Length: 574
Ligand code: HC1
Image (cartoon, rainbow, N blue to C red):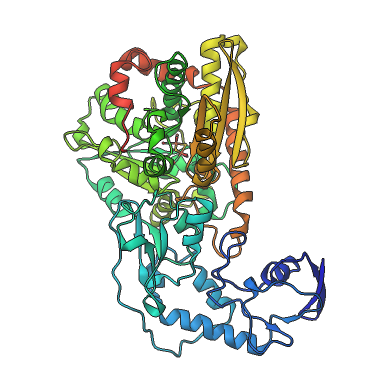
């Protein structure tokens, strides 16, 4: 331990700790923009300057380690004046269209400007005129708002193990973006959106489809069907100031009806259906029909990662479309036929915690020959919250509504999909019952729960021991796949692209200033909320879903039937 003095108080800190963490540990806030503990420590924004006795200049606290006997002052007039000047200089380069910026509420640059007491701009704005970059279906880059803090670069590299972003150019001309200025889709970006979750400003935002969705809702010739991903019910409340982990399922359904959606279905129905298809696929592969390990394919960020970086595993990917796509496909076929609706007049909207789902919905593999998409528009949790606000709806005071039938009926298995390990647990619940008989079937498989990067488990099926592994965040996926390449043997893997699974997706509420370090805690609480919903469901195993059973009876025949394969399965791009 090291003893030092900060603002007149003697404090202790572990050797090697930096001044920002040490001060925060003792209740003293030092403002920062580029610093993200354990992830991004470039010391480049210079907002965290402090006075250190004996030093001529003001060092950046985030890259200054504690020293025995150090005397630090974080709140002198020199520090305050210099920090104000630093933030003012950042603003001379910034396109401050704050009232219309999608990050208006959560902009850390705005928060830091207020925090350092900047209330007047004396320097002229000298920002470079740069184009808005919206060349892909999931993300928009606005280089005029980038403060070059490099948090996105570090998250992409260190958390996701992707490394698709970097700095190009020098000095004032520096631009952060994909290598060689490429379109991000081609530049091996996996569209997970973790970069925009870490962006302090509106430089990286989701590609918004709110306008298009309002237009469809307002069109009397269209019937607009919305589906909500399992994660939304445990995170939407945060956008309206509710505590993390608040379950708002019923209020969310009511809000969507008030907004004007004609039909409200749940992606959880299709998650149950995915399990039926995927559990049968696993059993087939265990009989020698297809490659092992079987790897889940419902997370489009992970699928894209596999296509780019591990194409040798593409035959291991489950051929099941993701639940989002399965539900979209069923709305335009089964549901349309059942209700006598013209599929051409149906518009399908998915509310997802994920930017990669926008990319997935636009994948050519998932667009029919006639150009029809399973899902027409994908909105993130943040976008749907904006629509709820635009409609003047007070989410908290709404009565609970219920999903429409039949594609709104779901079991607890479909709910837990949204937490890392959930797809595996749901699949095992059903595979167990299918092979060992109902009475043998266990429901909870806690070994696959939790937030460790890679988790291993075993289960006994048909007299053999199946080796299972779960990974979340593509850096952990990389670790697991490298183990397999080195000889480790597994039968079934669940891989989700984002840390925590969909509850930590790139479309979720942005934590904003001062809450960044709580990300893991947020994921834990959101997962607990999902498991609590699962526990309360009368039916908790996908094969028990009466609407899924009926779908097979009336329409698909049986899992992996020709019709099921045509509607519910897909291929990948090496
Ligand atoms: Fe997910 Fe899925 S769980 S991928 O995390 O398989 O996005 O929530 O909707 O499709 O069901 C996301 C969540 C989601 C799909 C399901």
